[in-house]
Image (cartoon, rainbow, N blue to C red; front, side, top):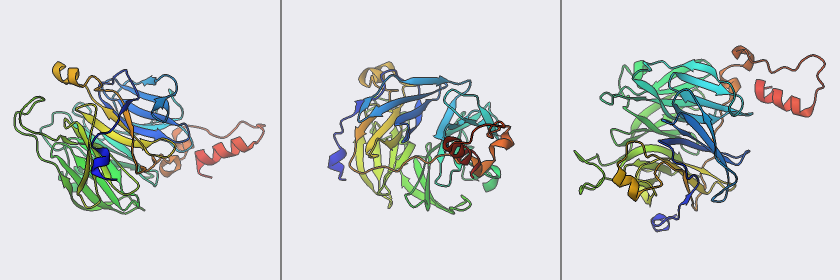
Amino acid sequence: MHASDLSSPTWAAITTEPNGLGESPFWHPQEQHLYWVDIPGQRIGRVAVQGLQTQGPVAYWPLAQEPGCIAPVQGGGLVMALRDGIYLAREWGGSLLQLAAAPYDTAKLRFNDGKCDAQGRFWAGSLYEPKDQALGVLYMLDGQGLHAMVGGEKDGGNHGVVTANGLAWSPDGRTAYWADTAAHQVRAFDVDAATGQLSAGRVFHQMTPKPAGWVWGSAAPYGGRPDGAAVDAEGCYWSAQYEGGRLLRIAPSGQVLAEVPTPALCPTMPCFGGADMKTLFITTSRQGRSEAELAQYPGSGCVWAMRVEVAGLPVNGFKVQTYKKLADWGIEPLPARGTQITNELIDRLRDAEGI
């Protein structure tokens, strides 16, 4: 795919009701639905999509807290990182079961960008809301609990970020990417697939810092800072450039291969989907944007889609038995005595208990 192929993209609006700050989109291949979160709106959205057309209305699930990120659960349901912890829902709109409490001061921090790795572990980074210290940490939920993987006590308080973003993995799972939004930097790490441990942290790509005093409409050029990301089948890292009005397609070497203009100044995160995984979706933000900017970008806050030539990687699901058995959470998946054993019941038990 050449830069010229992406310089004048044709975007289609997937939603017309804007989110305050859309984030964490993922394509559910079994349901053929796109999911995302509206962080300040405290809700999760989903809609069926075929091609670049929605199939029916958008459904919203209101929550009591801000959702930073979500991922599907293998066998059905959602895992989500809310302000005060990580939760499991076995069905859309269902009750929430806390899997892990937030290990930080919830008055100043909340969970932000995250997703699952190929082993079914759930990762989520945190955001330090005062934005004057790099206290954001990258956490992983596995069979032993919730662990700080980058930043926090693990690193002696070093290597944290102000706003955790841009989490993604290479197609072979051997490289992890994580963005430090305030530093305009994307980092890369070597990954131990068995344990999830990250090592050999390094700068993957450095964006040009924001000019002092810059606001939308300023004469000084500004390309934006790294927000959410996704990886395609060729191993290229697609980074949403918040306030830059563009996506960057970055080769595994760190070289920018293409700049893709977006229909909002503040794209927040891309993901790939559709039957062939060649539909690129993006969430966007309108929170805190000026009236003049919104007049020029009226679709800010909406979800958009375009077609690309290179397929993306499919979403990874949370593996319940990687963390605990359902019975450990007080959920009893076993049937009542006398229940007829069917193939459907056998499949459900296999999904639930890892049989």
